[in-house]
Image 1 (cartoon, one colour):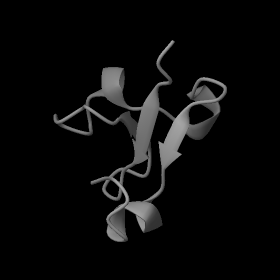
Image 2 (tube, one colour; image 1 turned 135 degrees about the vertical axis):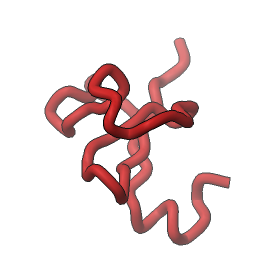
Image 3 (tube, rainbow, N blue to C red; image 1 turned 120 degrees about the horizontal axis):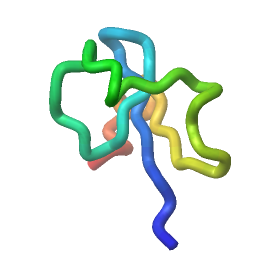
Length: 54
């Protein structure tokens, strides 16, 4: 089973699924940390800036 991946958003401060490329104000695609599934892969802002999402 594939793990879900989320990225921390530098704009809204919430988390989005890695493959989401829409408006971060869309409540249906915005998650708070405590809403993320247990064991989800999370890419922080720092990791994104280091290029770890490539």
